[in-house]
Length: 303
Ligand SMILES: [Zn+2]
Image (cartoon, rainbow, N blue to C red; front, side):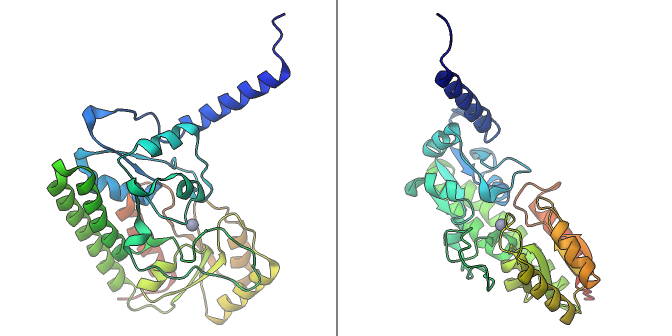
């Protein structure tokens, strides 16, 4: 009489899958390191910034594992519990619906609330597209000057969550803001004199970079999951031809196929521009400097 009923077996399998999923995420940081506050960053650029500001005074973990596209993150039970217990969760409302739903208002810091946002991009003919549940473009981290503003606010939030180390958080926030301000100056100077101002990108992630440095972004798709319509592809091809675009930008977590087809059609090359939605080989600053180098070549900048 020890036969397991089929229903039970299914339940056990589902449970094991759930455990396996959550184990890949933030890991087990329960009551880690001698009472330091637990701080959760939703995905990479926020992890980088939070680590800069937290320094040795808080234990920072990231929800989105390296190599995982953050927009469609699903949370396991263990991660949901961690989110409820964290002293502070740093996220950007509109990037990850699962995180937006799971954070509690009093212990969450929405980085988008710290900066001036720009409207979400939209293409005619893509009605019903609802990737981001907010009306603004959520990719705020691709403008170093806005990320510098976030650093200051994050320092204040960490200081409030852990008053014993308030000054240290504020000092490190000021240092991070300084480094980001320097990066912003490099971009301003590096992109000041270019033959082209048009960025044709695989997914519309670079709106803030375009906004800050007076470039024009033309995204093939709004989000990495959507296949562009033939109509959208021919619109972008026509635009790329008329503006003399020489490079179509792709990104590491998205298949370059569509961009390659488009590049072939308009006689352009492809190059990788990193939207930093996942951990790069170096860190935020070095990956952004690589992006600047790529942009300067593609847009034929001379200054
Ligand atoms: Zn994105």
